[in-house]
Length: 276
Ligand code: MN
Image (cartoon, rainbow, N blue to C red; front, side, top):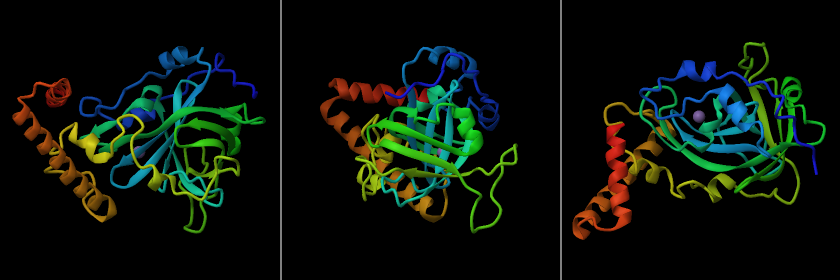
C-alpha cells in the first residue's frame, strides 16, 4: 500500500481565477469555496479525479485531480491515451472547485460556453516519491495512479518547455503551462483509442446530444459557442440530433398522455431548465 498524502494539513488553494472568469448568474457551473471544500474533504480516505469532455470553441478533455480543496486542471485537446507511446499535450488551467467534478450540462454563454460531459471519474493517488504533490507540481513531474471507469493504472504528467511551435505560454510564476499526459506501461495500457472506444458519459450514459436534449437544444440559435471548423460542425450535428431526440420525446408524451414516471420526470426537468 502506498502512503496517502497528508490531506489534513493541506491549506486550501485559491479559486479566484475560476471565479474571475465566470458569471454565475448566467452559468450553471458550481461556484465552490476552496476553504469549505478543503475542510469538507480533509477526512476523505481517497482523492477524487475526473475527466470532462468539453465541446466549447474546440473539443477538449479537462483532466482534474483533487488537491487541497480544489481540482487541479489541465485541458487535453486530444484526450488521454492508453498508449504509452502517446504524449498528450495538457495545458495547465485554473483550479476548479471540488464540486465541479460531478458537473455535466450546458453552459449557455460566456467563458467555456458549450456542453460538458462527465467522461470519467474515480480516485487518484500520487505514486511513491511523489506524495508531496506541491513539490511535484513545482518540479514539473507528478507520477500517479488512477482508479476510474475508463482510465486506470499508472500515469505521469510532466511539464514541457513548449516545443517546436516557439515560446510556451507561461503562468504568473514564469513557468510553462504546457504539460504532457502519458500512460505508463502496465496492465491498463494498450493500443486502444479510449476516447473513440468509450465516448459517452459515465454519469448520464448518453452522448453530447442527450445532454443537450435534456436541457434546451435551441439555446444557441442566435449565438453559437463554436461557429466554424470541426467543433462548429460537430456542434451543428449535435444540435440537430438533440432537437430530434426532443421531438421524439414530445411526440411520445402526446401519444401516451405523459402518464409514465419517466416522462413526467423529463417534463419536470424541462420546466426547471426553462426556469433557470
Ligand atoms: Mn474546458
